[in-house]
Length: 350
Image: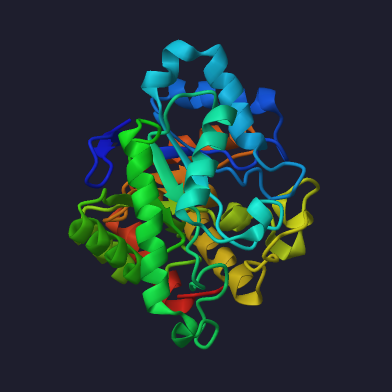
């Protein structure tokens, strides 16, 4: 599997990244370890997690996924150098994580120490801010009128960002983290952090991970252009739209044990009439070209210009195999035109 440079960092990561958020809720530790072993056998070297996982998040499972990965590292210490390990600090609004407080320099220091203990490692290769302190247009907040930018105190926001960046810099100098990145942020957020880094001689954000799929294209082209021009790696998460682009929720189905049957912190916001129509249309394209819907959806994201590494997740090794195998599929110009026609019909179905 091809490796690419992670933004402006020195890291080389595979173009497929193993997501882990189901481990500890939908998956056991043994299943999580099986997924890690299989992914590494296929050449994947990039694993993403977060202190808030597993998902759907709860007080009972907070930190569970990092602990599962940590137990794998403890049992496979010789392989630690072979993986690029990414984790994230939770933002405000989660009551059981630092009383729901926003991210600060002090909380960055605390969260890094806690993650290192759970992960049973001395360093984290990529440490990310899970979401900004300010309200941003994510998790179904991207529709006009949902977020009022005038409610953000920009001066205070910049001061907070600088405090965070200084704490991240200190952790890097201590060797506890090696690179830093963003998640669920915007072109403004990327630009502000880059300007603050340059102005104060602080480390640059090298990556951002946002939701991106055939059903959710709001980052194209403006945020992705920002990433390409500033050497910030773009890491799509939920490339099959929380399972919707597997087709398993077609015709109102909600198979037992699937995400949509569980309590969701932000609601099941992908479950809309237009989403189901779009999924059906993409299914027709897949069928016409002897592909599964998952293969079509992932292959499209994998080969899209500007995408650095795509974060995949699975609740079984069989699903993981299909996700990884889709990397080998090259969509023809004709198939891309068919996909493009569906995009024009359903540009933003949720």
